[in-house]
Length: 256
Image (cartoon, rainbow, N blue to C red; front, side, top):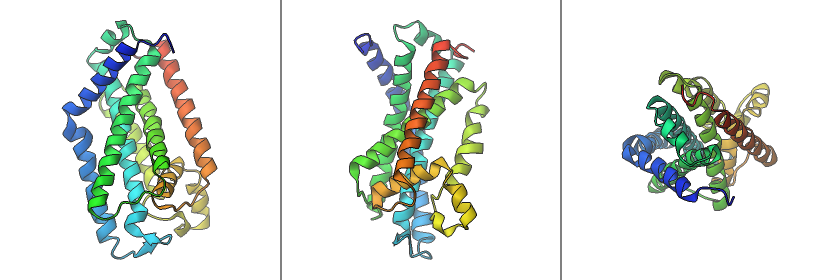
């Protein structure tokens, strides 16, 4: 740790934060508006027909999923666009010749994604407070899940940013993997409402454990195994982080 270039790392992280704030409408306001619409539609329109689910008000049940969707989307978008634009604009070459190691670059990108995820999550919670739909049963646990999920999708975003050859490819994972898994992960319904075979399928969906963990942290309701969720998060963080470091250290597509 003594070999870390703290000044360079701080500068890199500050640059990521400034990049986020330059397009604040896209990076922060848009997910807040999206979350507000979800809260209105699913909480107060659909929610008037569904009085309760799993023993709690429907808005309280779906809010953790709404928060999770926007947090992971923000973290993924931040890191994927950061890495891709650095490659596309060739500014990655300036970063590579700077006195920063590949690990320090990764730390800078991932912290940028986590910070954006936390800010988006905090904003959504404050919006929910205005609608009288915000609860936190376990404050430190919800912070753990927001940071962990932001980290996981921050790493995924970096990998997609390395892989993508054009802007359209940045959305491939989000369109064909992330979105379907979200809607099949019990965001808007209890998996106990599904047929037995579909419940088994849902329990193999990693997104189910993400939303289930946040839901427990917010309202104290859990449908899945906490231990499986913790193990899954640990495996994804370590596995994706290691893969990201390996590809960066090899320079894979950094200059393409």
